Amino acid sequence: MRLLENTDTQPSLPEVHRSIAIPDAKSFWRKLIAFMGPGYLISVGYMDPGNWATDIQGGAKFGYTLLCVILLSNFVAIVLQSLCVRLSVATERDLAKSCRDQFSPKVNIILWILAEIGIIATDIAEVIGSAIALQLLFQIPLIVGVCLTSLDVVLLLMLQRFGFRYLEALVITLVSSIGLCFVLEVLFSRPDLSSVVLGFVPQPEILQKQEILYVALGILGATVMPHNLYLHSAITQTRAWQRTPEKKREAIKFGTLDSTIALSFALFVNAAILVVAAASFHFSGHQGVAEIADAYKLLSPLLGVKVASLVFALGLLASGQSSTLTATLTGQIVMEGFLNLRILPWLRRFISRMAAIIPTLICIVLFGNGGTTKLLIFSQVLLSFQLPFAVFPLVMFTSNPRLMGEFVNPLWLKVLCWSIALVIAVLNLWLLWQSLLELLHIH
Image (cartoon, rainbow, N blue to C red; front, top):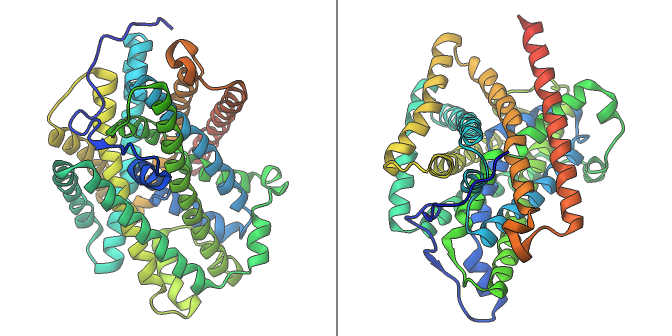
């Protein structure tokens, strides 16, 4: 690929760039709080409705067996998001801008199209999840609920006008709500703790049985989200660290700590969803539960707790709303990064949301409410296909001493990251192939 020189000095998200001060005090906790926020914005992508669908299916069908896959996927996510922090601090460029700096225009157009497809696929999952939650909670027709999800674009613009901290505070509140809901659900479902612990130990049958491997790869595809790599590398730059090697090392340290803590919380949520599905459905003869709405209807009767289904739906609504905010924000980052094209933020976010709402509405009109589940699964397949096109540039840039200088990946991290990138590419190609075969078989 032909390398190009960087001629663009426009920062990522200029309206909030370096808008959050970092205290000079030596206090560890004050600095951690100052850097805390971006990790939680990206963590919502790891507990979105797409994750719910795969975790529920995995728990209902195979019990606690796939908990080890959630653990492994989360480890991969922590490593990749740490690279985003490293790239952002060392180069002061987000991933999309770095691609535009280093690749030819033709390559960038292709990467931009793939990134937009990934964002639309992500947004479709969030729109469907929010609409299902509104239907379950308030009996709002699905088609009306889909339209109502457009209102969060207005909320995003209002919050960002007051400052990026307000947006982060809202997302942290929503993420905390999801966590609280699943603390309650785990208590309601009373899982066998020894079996849960064993579930985190990899079992040979995951690789031996195609049906289990297919769901396992679906969990991986739903967990490691390509849009988060673009988002994290941009919002890290909302912090105004000093531009000295020492302060940059500090920014990388605290930024990585922020994302690691946030993604550990996401690990708990994903594991809790699977544990609740396993304890509630797998061991009660309801292994066929694969849809979010079915899980909602069965939870209270099976667990004997009236509020179990209500808590489940509230968590889903918080998940969908927090994820839509970040997916919409990523649309602006990707367009500005790859194309160096700035349009009014509200217009960019409106276009991004309409690109998700329109296909969802068409699906509901043509195939009814049941069609949304198929669209949700299809959106995860699209994400799986797009992921390597974000991971490979990220690993390549952070391993390049010319770009990174003293902050380049050490040898052990290079080996680990290239191994992760290759495994993700192979597994996602396999998942895509199996999904196409299944689609052809259905028809």
